[in-house]
Length: 378
Image (cartoon, rainbow, N blue to C red; front, side, top):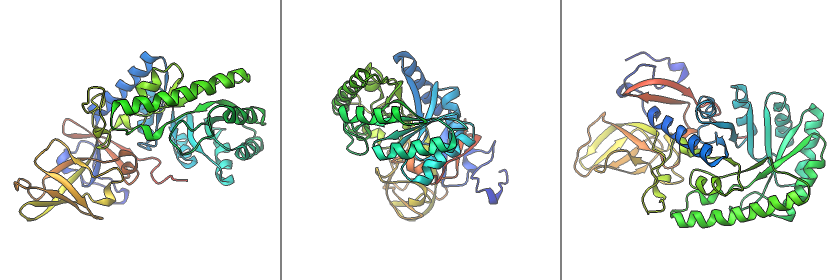
């Protein structure tokens, strides 16, 4: 086993056997990851839309570069100014902050970032337009803006139609701002369990978005970007003839909750494979029908449910505490120091609690990717 440098908190070294990785660790099956990247790129190409991959899933500059270089992405999305700063510093040159930025300090940082990359931000408040314009003017840059409309998520966004047009007109008239289009993301539709539920939710979103684009056009405002869609619904938006940018993120990894949604035939989604796992070690088996592993709450997010033990139906991850995961082992098949791969319940926040992705292929560590924007939450 190659010696690691403790000060860098790296769980593996290049060339190391997967059995020697320190656990719990976040590992990426590189073959599955690369297929996922290619598959989404091919869909976007055939549908005639752009892919602006969402980096909030992985927060990694290495993965963002792969999505751009090998996955056809025109740029990336992120959710916070500090995320954008980290990714731009690592060489990403086209970033949409698919969220509102209203804190004056963060607006100033966002405006300064425009000198280094193309930066786009979402807006749903007229007062925010004045603040964004002032910061962009102060720094002598142009900041692009998307009007966010609420197409069913019930979260951020102005009402589609007239309200969106008024906000777009204000942006277009503001010094040093550019109106670039619409943000029309229906986040809560992504994990609706049935195909019909997702189809119907997005049909309503498409109708609202189409009408808003038409009203903007009548007002003399064109949408260079009509963005939205996620891993659960991208086919509907991509084939709508209305959306021209997809903002999918989880497709690169997938997770246990995406494993619970169904396709048109009622089967689990199979377009994208699980590529992200928490590698964990059995550390206790004091009870004959129960094992304990070293991946607890501090190694994952369980907001969307507990992880699933990958590739096994004889053992089940049943509960967790800070440092421990309890695994039902009714047949007593696990042994101390056995390794298991867990599919996390929710990939995005799970990535945010790790420093590194360990890329593996053919049983060995091929690459190490830092989670570039880990903890960048402001």
